[in-house]
Image (cartoon, rainbow, N blue to C red; front, side):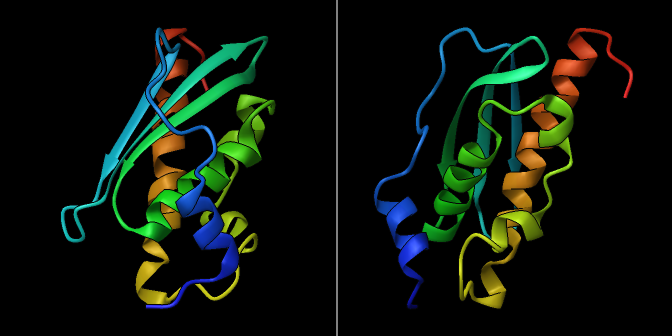
Length: 126
């Protein structure tokens, strides 16, 4: 399968990859059909994502989409990040095969899970 330059760049050189020590929250998702799993770690300060890391077990598109997501949300408010949609990730790349679009949805879902867990932990109603 041939991927765009942007997908390959983020796959070969993922941004914000790795586990985070003492995160404020973690979001986890998985897809039992394709086997992809994602974890997103957040450090939050003054309602902004001060730092974000990820671990993704999956294909090139899954890794690239999670990397792109971290770049789009680092330094942004939790409210802004919670509104990120799969389409926002997809418009940053070109030619994602239709059978790989779910990877952007998984990345979005992992981030939303992290934010939900943060809000629950800090008793923030959203």
